[in-house]
Length: 190
Image 1 (spheres, one colour):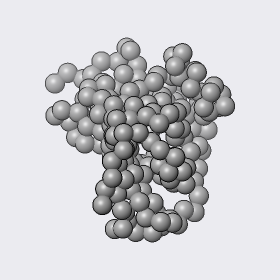
Image 2: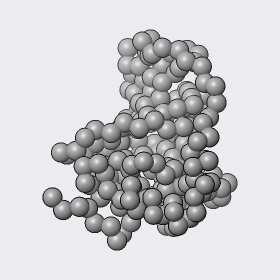
Image 3: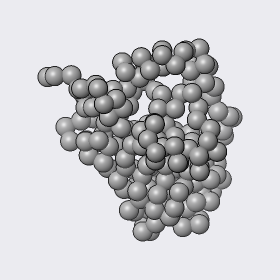
Image 4: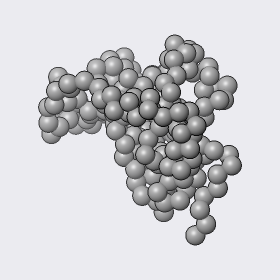
């Protein structure tokens, strides 16, 4: 049976801290729904109604495009180990761009000033609903550790090559929506 809460309580924070992965779901009118897995090592609970994660360079930037167009964002955590539970955080998301004062402050206060070379942006979720459900149908898996391929990929590129990659792959969504990652990149014309 599901239960709803107006904000994150201590039981929810404890549950999040035990997880290794979460999923971010976003959508925009007329666009495809996006669902992306993320490692919880980059996630921080800032308050009972706010979480943020340090987002790394990837092959697309759908979440940013959807947030710019619509703002809705849902995060889902599910227990693959230990007692079963699913936790969803619903709310409005926004991108915090690299180089902004907000980004620098969050990096300093919640990430010990440590910015990975592959950092692209931060995503903030202002939570307006927390929901738990049983998770009885979720199979059990054992975590064997993080993957290091992205770290190696980033290390094999110069800063200019990373910038070029982001401009080519992360400036617009697969549906042509602007991500806001670069002020000087317009979406392709239909």
